Amino acid sequence: MNTPTSVAHSLDRATCTALDAADALAPFRDRFVLPAGVVYLDGNSLGALPGHTAAHVQRVITEEWGTGLIRSWNDAGWFAKPVALGDRIAPLIGAAPGEVVLGDSTSASLFQAAVAAVRMRPGRRVVVSERGSFPTDLYMLEAVQELLGGDEPLERRLIHDEGPSLEDVLGDDVAVVVLTHVDYRTGRMRDLAEVTRQVQASGALMLWDLCHSAGAVPVDLNGAGADLAIGCTYKYLNGGPGAPSFIWVAERHQSAAKPALTGWHGHARPFDFEFGYAPADGITRFRVGTPQLLSMAALEASLEIWEEVDLEAVREKSLRLTELFISLVDARLAPWGVEVVTPRQSALRGSQVALRVEDGFAVMQALIERGVIGDFRAPDLMRFGFAPLYVSHADVWDAVAALEEILSTEVWREPRFARRGAVT
Ligand SMILES: *Cc1c(COP(=O)(O)O)cnc(C)c1O
Image (cartoon, rainbow, N blue to C red):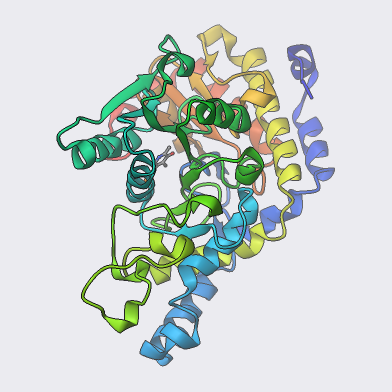
């Protein structure tokens, strides 16, 4: 499904609205609350709010907390919630029931999973990751090195597009490889099955970061025979700000996997209040302490939508949206030196597109003021996420038209667009 640039020249907004009229996923847009006049292309950072989330969270607060009080740990299924919701995320990532548990933040979950993986490969003293990874992943791996270093240091090897490659760094000393399936900046997608196979052939375990994959692209962890994975629920899954991360551990590894953080909710008998730690069976051992139940309530609401969604249809529309965007950028924004950084080959692309733009920060601020919300990643990337449940083809048209206007009028040069907040 390629939209060549010549087609983009002949495209107009009416063609885009016709594509929307024929779009089987279009009705999902009404399930979300989006402010009028906003084109929201940042669902890869914070997913949009489902229309029924507020009422559901309100009910959990007033009925389960307010009236049920402590009884809700049993009566409302609070205690089982992290694994119950994990079972509902499982089909979105090719996992089985009992393999996924909701955790803390992605950073903490990565630490939990990476420590478990290194301990499952005793004698292997290397952790492999990628230089361009989301920095928190690398920061957490530094902590893993510090924790498990001891007398024999744990080495970290980082691959990079300009070398070394994965093949260069793999060897019989590598315990685990930690890679992001879809790159947070460029949107480049790795071949999950092929990389898993390559890593496992060296005897190492494969730990995937699915932050930009869950809800964005079909993922088949068990089909690929992967080992461990973690991911966010507040991006494409619309769980809301602070929604918990998830951890997946393949069933075959669960009895050997020892979590880094041995809290009481991961204990075999938490309410026996025993003196010593004994891990629970299965994925439950990856729980730590009291779960964030109000955040989980918001996620529980959004998962109702995800249960109705065909992920193949999501992928198909996602590629249509990103291809349309790339074609329009090529056709209309070339005079300003705008460069598409995201792979043009659909198999190598997630659900976002990054543009390299000089002064991209100020250009993005001007774009946001015009109602088109994307984000910026230093030093020069403007990121646009295309969440197929609520982004339309007309949105793509309007976003590129707004960007063209901002670049041609140079309104972005106004000093107010250069001011940076704490979050970009
Ligand atoms: C969004 C994202 C994170 C975020 O980590 P938190 O601990 O949830 O803040 C981590 N890793 C990757 C690859 C991400 O895209």
